[in-house]
Every structure is written in structure tokens, then in C-alpha cells.
Image (cartoon, rainbow, N blue to C red):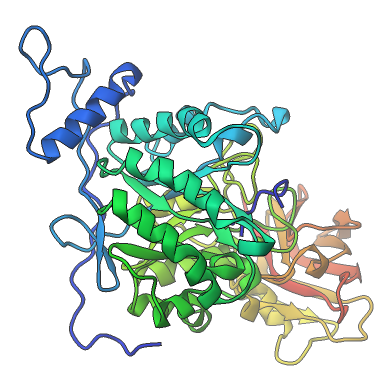
Length: 518
């Protein structure tokens, strides 16, 4: 589902071993794009790939940018349930979506950067995207040609220069057919775009971002098949990404009745509102289908409740949702992905308004580490109170007090107070007096929203001088809040809740009380 808050993203396992999956070939050392030479470079790459002579300058030498030539990428296609390169080697694409360029000035306080600079960022400073997804919104008075010339072509040519793939994403989030976007509007876009980049191997076409309703695969297939056929007539080898109804979540139906045509992968969009990132849940949603057909997640993302997350769809944490999802996808490299969204405005963003990378339980720092194949530990997994003695005023079922200090911030690792306990209290006794920098309180439900988090509560600490309040919170809507530690050593921490939540049942839901030391 499109996460821009203003514009509202079965078969048995194979019996033979799957071939190894690789990332696309490594890019050459980072260099600044020579914008004036990009179009010529793209043409040269295409002609060379076709075995044609590259036009020469008046001096007889090939016309080239003043520095090293861009790295050619392999034409991508599909084989079985895999995306493959021209040699037939399975490839896992991993990257990010950027902001639709037409919307780059909608948030003046967000300090907008040129989209060309943002795309450069996705392959620099430790970011290692090998694909960038470019949403193309077509609403307004611009013609398709004007829209493409302003908001697509410069970035396609930039991707060629950088030696990365780019997904041209027709970014409708709408019903389709008689009650929504007419097929003629989709065809108009692709009739212009499909032949334009048919010979550029860097370019991938995502045919329709998120059709919503009718919620019928057969109706959708009848709607989109003629569009696919028309694209194939002029771009016979371009990798196509096909979405599905209900915000691109019907890949199970696609696996049972695929769209006709070659080199097609199927899109799934995943957010925490669809449930825990467990293997059982993800298999049922798209993992089982990915054993039969090529599947790519062109949108997924999360942030804790607060200003950087949609209040109902994208609410999640790195500990409780992001890390389990990474583990799942890393074990299934036949599933490619682009994370949503490399931006400081559309939600769930990876940067704050000043372009500082959001870390901790926000998704930005983990996505960056993931792209670089670097580890990223759960922020709630290691702190001074893990395994400490915890006593609660009540507990719901088996969700006892010990789960508030077990280092597990998934839904299964929460302390829940009992219904009827109107002032739940949790007391944690540390192994020894400890200087505390801050106390982080994680609350709520992964896949829930701001209504599930602790509403009114206080964090208290016990020192040699007795109990004192470190911080209090009223009308809270955040899934993670922090209280400062005192100057003296602490031997106990207490959570006193006076309003558990805005949800029914009205109980305290606490993932972790993390005691941080300097």
C-alpha cells in the first residue's frame, strides 16, 4: 500500500537443489555522474550489447564521458521462480524506492533534495542499492510525454550512468476498470514508455503499483493482460513486474493462474498491519507462491508509532518486525526486494526532516546495514536489565513480568497486564546497583497502532536515597519512549501505569523495559 500519508505502498518445495543466487555484479568505484554524457553512454551501451559499432567522434575515437565508462548491467529475465541474468544465473535484486519526483516540493520543512542527489545517495556512503524504484505519478495536467521527459528520463539515464537497475513504477493506488483507473490510461502510459527504454537493460517496468478493487484476480488479469501484451509487442525482453488487487497482495492467486507472457515477476507489498514477520505468516502471504513464480517485494517498511509512521499500516519496530523479516528474506534469496522509502517525508521514511538517518527501532539504519550485508542487532536485545528479576501487579495469561526483560520485542515477548488491573505496575530489580544513562520503554503491538501503546505512565528509579520519578508520559502515542537516568546508581526500576491504552481490552502491553548504561 502506498505509504504517502498525503496520497492516501502452495506447491511443495523443489526436489532438486536451487541454483545459487547472486547479487548483480559489483559496481565500479563511485564517481560523480557526467550528466551531459549520460544519453550518449546509454546509447553506446545498448549498441555494444547488440554488437553494433559505437559512433566515433571527429577524431575517430569513441565519444565517451571524461572519466571511466559506466558499468554495463546484464539484461534480466525470469526462469521458473527466479529472476535471472542474461547467462541464466539467478539474481536477487535489493534496493530502495525513492520519492516520486513530482512530489519533491510538497514538504518545505523537510528540506527537499533533488531526486538526482537522492539517487546518488542510494549507492554512496555505505549504501549499496543495486536497484532503485522510481514511482511515476501521472495525475495533473501534464501529458505522458511531458511527465516522462521531466520526471522519468533524467533518472533512467542516471541509473545507466551509475550502473544500477531502475524500476519505472506506474504509481497508481486506485480501483481499476469501470470504478477506477480505465485501462486506456494505463495503456497510454506504457504505449509511450515501453518502446522508449526497450533496449536499455537497466530498466524494469512495474505495470501498475497498487490496484485495489475489484478484489478479484480473474477480473484483474482480464484488465491487465492486454496491457502486458502491448508492452511485450514493443519491449519483448524487458523484465515486467505485475501487481495485483488489494494493494498488490494477491500473489497466491497469480501463482495459480499467471499472466500470460515471458519474463514476468509478481509484486507483493508487505507492511506490519498484515501481521507478525513469522515464517508461517509470510509463507502464507507470499512465500509459498514464491516457490512457483518469481516474487519481488517492491514495498515494505516500518517505523515505531509516532511522526515517522502511518498510524495504522506501517507501525512496527526493527526488533519486532524488521529483523525477523530480514532473516526470512535472507534465507530465501530467490525473493528480490526494494524497501519503502528512501526519503525524509513520505512514510515510513528512512530519514528525519533534516536527512539524518533514523536508527534504533526505525528502519533506516537497518536497511542500510542489510544492503551492505552487515549485521544489525535488535536494540532491545542487549541491556542491563536482560534476565533481571521482574515482578508485576498482574499478568494476562502466560505473558508474565519476565517477558518485559527478556530481550525479545516481538509480540510473543511482551508482558501483558490482566484485564481489570487499572493501574498496572512492573518492578525490575537489577543484579547490582548500576549507573543508568536512560530507560527505554517499548510498548504496544507489532501490526497494531498508536492505540495499543501505553497511554499514561511514569518511569521511576530507586537509588540509595529512595524512589524518584525519572519521567512521566501523558497522552502518549509512541511505541518507544525514553526516560533519563539519575546521577546516582540505580538498583530498581519501576513502571507505574495509570492509563494502559486506548484499546479494548484496556491492558498494558510492554515489549521491554530496557535499562541503558553509559
